Length: 160
Image (spheres, rainbow, N blue to C red):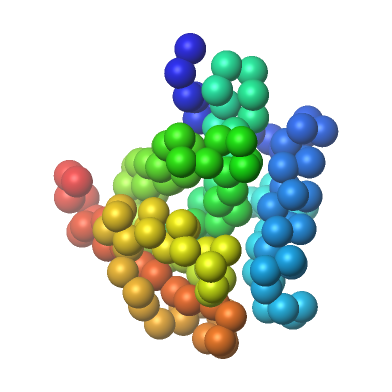
């Protein structure tokens, strides 16, 4: 069986451990007070949809879509486990996020991510998928430790 992406309720210890790994990685590569990653409680909040990726019975990665308003969303909590890097996990999760955003009628997707070598693969993934560098959005403030990207999804009612 190939890679499967499915909605997840974050209830299993394995998924919770992946979120802990994600948060640890963000704190390891970003100064205190500059990490904007969502914890389990905030990933379960209304307006957030969370997915996990599985290869056979192995948890490979995760990602989320957070509603910003009726026309836009934010990509959150993208993480691929080290054993599954460069195997299409991030792409599969991002594809599901974009598909869901379009189904919701969003016209834009936004994201905030870190800077430096630890984030270069993420930057490349987003650029390959039509995201472009942008300014800060929402409640974010631009610093030396974060960058912002945006992707237009088309007009409301358009078929993309």
